[in-house]
Image (cartoon, rainbow, N blue to C red; front, side, top):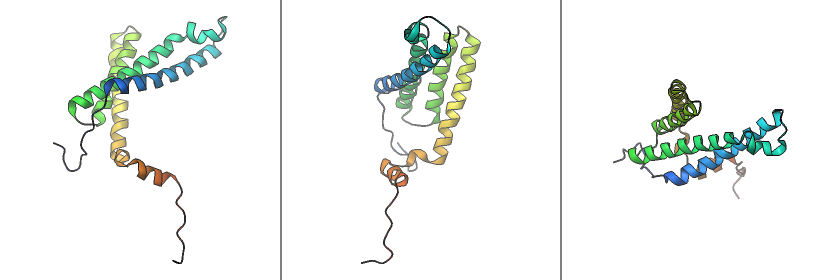
Amino acid sequence: MSSPDRPAYDPKSPLKYASLIGLQAGAVGAFVSAIQNALGNHSHGAMGIITRSGGTIGFFAAMGATFALTESVLANQRHTDDAVNGAVGACAAGFLAGVRARSIPMAVGSCVVLGAAMGTFDYAGQLTGEKGKTREEKRRQFFKQPLKPLVAE
């Protein structure tokens, strides 16, 4: 099924990927919540991270998990790993942001904006060929190589 220029598709586990990305996005949300708590005037103290702006943590986690789940399910259905999967995943996450704001126009607009941004980002990454490098090639490129002797012994 795969053409010579496209490698064979390796399926992703949607729940594993969604939970991993959801946890990472939740950690970013905790950081943003801590910044909001530090900059705001209130009498909640350090617990304000949870009590005042704790919804931020859950929202970031939900957006990350929605993106990852949608992207991996679509990739598994299409048996391809390309920019369309990222665009659709970002569209779903953007739609979730609009639903949180209780505005259908904002949901559609953020779906379009995030989908276009992520699709462009993924497409540009595929154009530069970053996905084709193996881990060993990246490692060799990153670390310095020992100098070769000028005269063979």
